[in-house]
Image 1 (cartoon, rainbow, N blue to C red):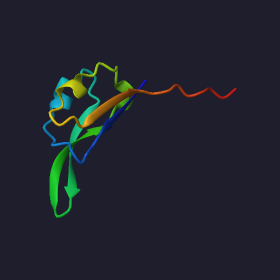
Image 2: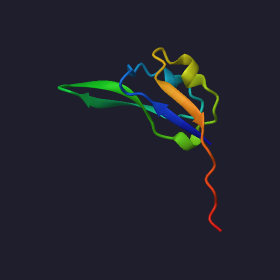
Image 3: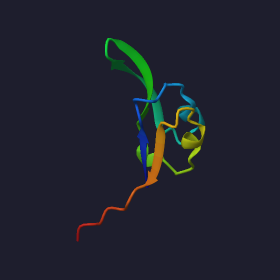
Length: 76
């Protein structure tokens, strides 16, 4: 399992991450930024991430991080 993060402050909404992701982890959405609206990438299917790093390697603004998530301990 992986933790996927998009820094919305630096994301330019170019959709490269959504295009290169083989498991459709990302969706491009419109967000309000002050008086204006702009496009940004949003993580919508984090559980589908396979850790291939295609999004990280192709993001032109280095706005995406993918980290291996620690497994949660099962309750007995």
